Amino acid sequence: MTQADSVAEARLSDWISLGVLASWVDRDAVDDAVEVTGKTARRKGGKLPPQVMVYFVMALALFADEDYEEVWARLTETLADWGGFGDDQALVTTGGIAQARQRLGEEPVRETFAQVAAPVATLDTAGAFLGTWRKMSIDGLEWDVPDTAANAGHSGIPGPGRKGSGWPFPRSGP
Image (cartoon, rainbow, N blue to C red; front, side, top):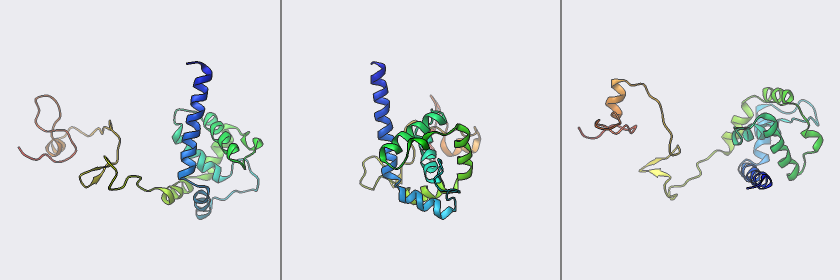
């Protein structure tokens, strides 16, 4: 694979990730969240309006291995392609981004989440439920719990030659 292919591939994934983000979290929901929490822009025409910063925080989760500058570059390119975001707005410093995140706080992000978060799977979605329980984690999730007699009595002790499954549900049987 050439460097051009890897760049093109990464760009496609940027579009898919940010496109999915925009399709699930529309601008009206973000605007409402910013309005409800009272975190509206201090001045008109600022480079880092609260609405853009909400999308930036969400983009940080999508690109967790990247630094602020890289996430900002990916987000602003996408916002410019969608329209309404100029090249002059994209020129900010890491310090400016950090200050804008501090001004934003957690409230608008939490409110946006409250407005748009909903289970994706329905009762008819294959593999989404274990009996009557909706699955809430991905394969490979592990929890470290203290090695106590109470925990061993509840879940059993996993491993070769030991009784109990280690599954986080009470044992049934001896």
